[in-house]
Length: 132
Image 1 (cartoon, rainbow, N blue to C red):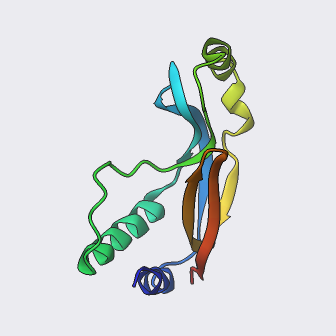
Image 2: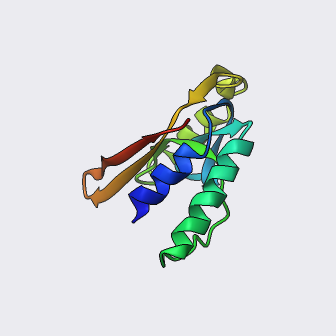
Image 3: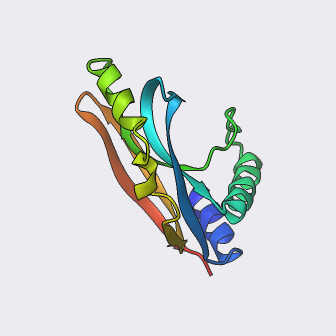
């Protein structure tokens, strides 16, 4: 099952550091639906992602269609109301500076269950597997 795959992958990979970088949005900054901060130093993260994808395929889970895009989601935009003001705030010079070069340690892989509700998503931790 998927938790066994995550356990196996985490035991085969060491802890590593990532660094926050630029502020961005999906699908793009002019029309934000998801606001995120990018990360650098993601080589180990990409390696783990590829290992998990390969193992998930081996148990019959479908592959992810979208390319892997390492980021941390800060928030979701629920409507277009005040979009221009939001875009203006996101584009302020130095806005991303509060994130840039903030380093943090990645020490585990956590599997979440996401349940979408009218009030917003509810996230539940299914399992956490420490990296070696």
